[in-house]
Image 1 (cartoon, rainbow, N blue to C red):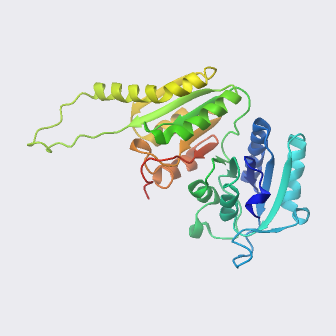
Image 2 (image 1 turned 90 degrees about the horizontal axis):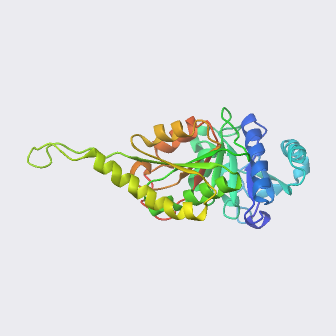
Image 3 (image 1 turned 120 degrees about the horizontal axis):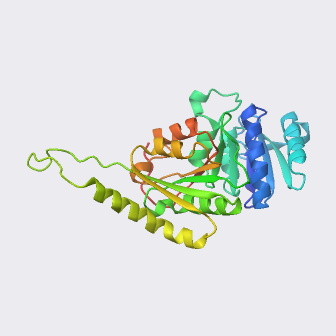
Length: 301
C-alpha cells in the first residue's frame, strides 16, 4: 500500500477481526463522520515479509474482496454510517509499518489496544504502541475494556507540560471538544523535590504555595489563546504536585477522550517512549489520542 492510496487528512483504522479492532473501527467511523473525511480500513495480513526493490515492508496490496476480515469490517461501516466514504485495503506485511506509512498522509490513525498477530509481541511490541511511537499524525488507541467515547456532549482531558510542546495536543483537544460540544480539563503536574544538603547542609525552606501559584499561572497563560479561539468550550484546570499518570487517569475516568503529547518536559518527559506512556495506554478507560509534539526535549527512552 503506497501513500498516494490514502486520502490526505483521512481517518485510517487498522482491523484484524479481533474484538479490540471492532471497537477501533466503531470509533473510526464516528471520527470520519465527525470530520467529514474518508475512512480507510486497513488489514495487514502479517503472514509474509515483503522487502525488496519493488515493494517496501508492508506495502504490497491484494484485492480487498478476497479478505473476509475486510468484508465484515466494510459491512459494519455500511450499517453504522452509510454516508461515510470508505475504502478497504488488504495488505501483506506488518501492521505497524503499514499504519505508520499511512500516517504520513492521514489525519488520524485509529487502532485497538491489542489484537491478533502472527508475530510474538515480545519482539516488536504491540501494534498500538509501535504506531503511537512512530506515527507522524495523531493516533487514537481504543481500549477493549474502556468506553468508546461519543460525538455527544462529553469531556476531554488533555495533558499539558507547560511548554510550547503542548500546543499540538491542546489544538487537537480543543478542536475535538468544540466539534463534539464537550468540555476540556487541562491536567498539569509538577514534581520538584528539593535536595537537602546541597547548600552548606541546610534544608530547603522554600514555599510550596508560591511554586503552585507559579505553575497555575503558567498553565493559565498557555491556555489563554485556546480559550479565546474556542469560547464555546468550557475549560477546567487541574494543576497539582503529583504523578502525571495518576492524575491523568483519575481525571479521565469518565472522559470521552484523553489527549497526550508525544514529547515534552517536566511531568510529561518521555511520555511516549517511557513508562508513563505504557501505563497510560495500558490503564486508561477511554480512548487515548497521542499527538506528536513539535519541539521540546527529546523523549526519554
